[in-house]
Image (cartoon, rainbow, N blue to C red; front, side):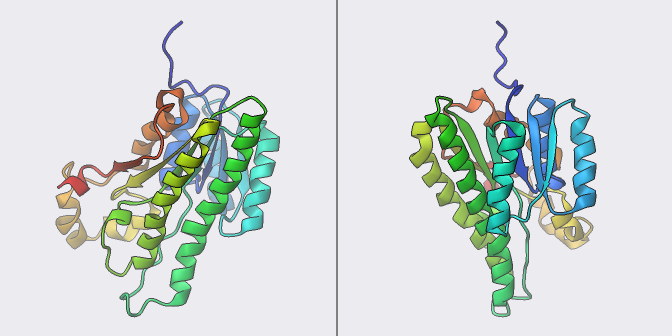
Length: 260
């Protein structure tokens, strides 16, 4: 039998914020590897576009309108996804926002709460509900599952005017490690991905900012912005049997930026 650790046929992957950017890049990689896909997104037009792109891979695609900042929507959405697809093997908590302030001293409680609501609370509820589903399946005799969270290299850096955003991303790292330790007995794995400067809607204004490109992107050893599709490979790896012994890790994908 041929060695095919990256074949995801028969597996189901759920990606929050999967209708654009890094989330969609990961979803397309997973679909190309044979996984059926569940996308959580709040924009109907983007959801429809993502569904069309993913369906081209001849896999099942379920689109759900879920605001991860609302606990009841996350709980109901996970249950509905499992019922519709039959199982959930991989959950990628990718949805998030980036709300900055003119300065830390001028940062409002509203900005702080907005970041916490989507980036930290949303990831917590998503991973918690995924754990419930996967543990129940393991106790029924079918162990295994992969939990992934999209953090940021900002979790390891100081970022002026973005303390609220980076605080959420930094908090995800010990959460993931704790999940990895607690749920390994059920065959669950949990890992965090830390993207660098990637060309997405969130970084749109910076991509055309000459000074930023000259002072920051010029420091990236590969000398360019990352692209969403460059996260397809890590998503497939973490969803596959190839990563069966890989858990509790912080995986940096930044073109070498933090190493320079």
